[in-house]
Amino acid sequence: MVVPRDSAVGEQSPDGGKKAAKGVKRVAAVKGESHTALVRRARRINRELAEIYPYAHPELDFENPFQLVVATVLSAQTTDLRVNQTTPALFAKYPTPEDLAAADPEQVEEILRPTGFFRAKTKSVIGLSKALVADFGGEVPGRLEDLVKLPGVGRKTAFVVLGNAFGRPGITVDTHFQRLVRRWKWTEATEPDKIEAAVGALFPKSDWTMLSHHVIFHGRRICHARKPACGACPIAPLCPAYGEGETDPEKAKKLLKYEKGGYPGQRLNPPQAYLDAGGKPAPPLGSA
Image (tube, rainbow, N blue to C red; front, side, top):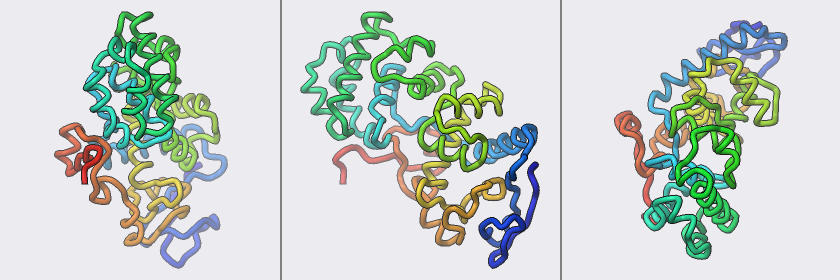
């Protein structure tokens, strides 16, 4: 069940957990929480995140499905920012699948070098471009079963493309998503496909794409892997893992990233809603 509890600085919580910040009313999951209570708590967290990040969006710059699938493949083992700083040169030289399919691998490698693992990524993006030309008439398919056949494209990449280029609901289980849903006790699963299934069962399908954005935004800005900013987290009362990170509000504020910390985001060309909310676009590659 879910039980409300109050904790103040200098006091131990009733269940022996870590101390809570002063004035934070805690609502934490305990062993034996019913499925109904879990659903309610999970949906409440998503509602809260929607208010915190009304401008949540995919943090890769793209203008069409082809650019999005390529950028998502390139985002493996690097930041979206570095991908966004690299893809303008790539798409300026190779704007279509046909162009990239016929590209000289060495020239593509040189462009993609800043993203890391550039040889493997070059092989993937040229390979998927050839597959698009040969099997799909140069168009990115809008079905999961077709997308995962493309070189370098797995379920995570496919759901990014389906949700953001085609408006078809999907859950993006990246490292941030995995970390947060386990901290929130939405699931104990560790395998992406099992996490996807478990979390998907808690929400209407229509919520899946924006849920992914909300969770990933929160993971990048506040609920970090090594030192979450618990004391600056608006959903602290709903988090069973409260106290794993810095609970002092002033110290926690210094851990905030991107627009929450007053810094630029990851997109060079972010949506207008993000800019209207005070977000700053990222600088291009090589800028001071």
